[in-house]
Image 1 (cartoon, rainbow, N blue to C red):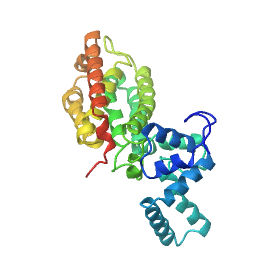
Image 2 (cartoon, rainbow, N blue to C red):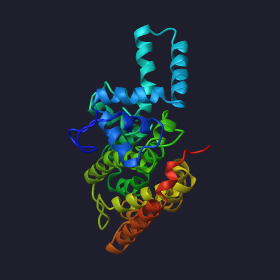
Image 3 (cartoon, rainbow, N blue to C red):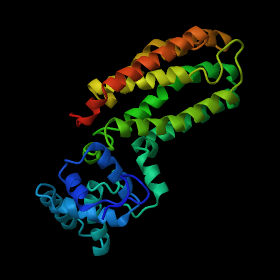
Image 4 (tube, rainbow, N blue to C red):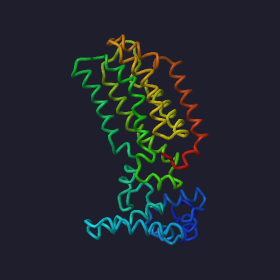
Length: 312
């Protein structure tokens, strides 16, 4: 049954739309509305799942997946095996393109959709860097000399999270997710935003509590450079993949900025003067803003490149 306008409060998926979604001929806007709706509507999720199961191409594939799961889940209690076998069809049908069974709460699905980076070692590394900087400054007596090191390191820390957020090497359901309208650049930007939402407050707060350096940039001076580098990694990733793009941008920054600032024997004000040219002043920040805008425009022009599956 289908009532109201697509995406509206009284709208439900009809049999025709479910069939078109199952065979891949649904318009992109209709597919987005369907995937969003079935996250909260069990009846429509079951309808779409049935349509996918009945498909000439998808039905046998899903039956094969179900049989393989049941055949290999010998130690699992039969009820648990049945639940696991149900996940595949529901994910493919759009009930949750993040790989989480739709029976979980919406909050749990949102947290899971944030991406692998927020469930892995990167989050631990971020916490260690932020707390380590404070510990070195106060506990080890290094004082203000830690601030410039954190300042030049902070812009590249989100890059590691971006590299681990999307792609065949990090997401077990990458092929399934990338083949849906919710995949590609849309999901990559969502997961990148989640990485920035965690890293920006943590690193900015750590910089704010460090002892101030005379004449040095403030705790938020790294934000525009960090944004520009993140967008540069995404834009480069449209050509070579997310991991390679983030690795290339991060390596260049580490070689040109971090290594010279950390390699000398300077401390305090001298070390800050080494890092300040990359952050301090309206002209420098304006250049970072222009660079971020240019990378964003390139990313928008290359958005279709993320619709294709990554290759090894």
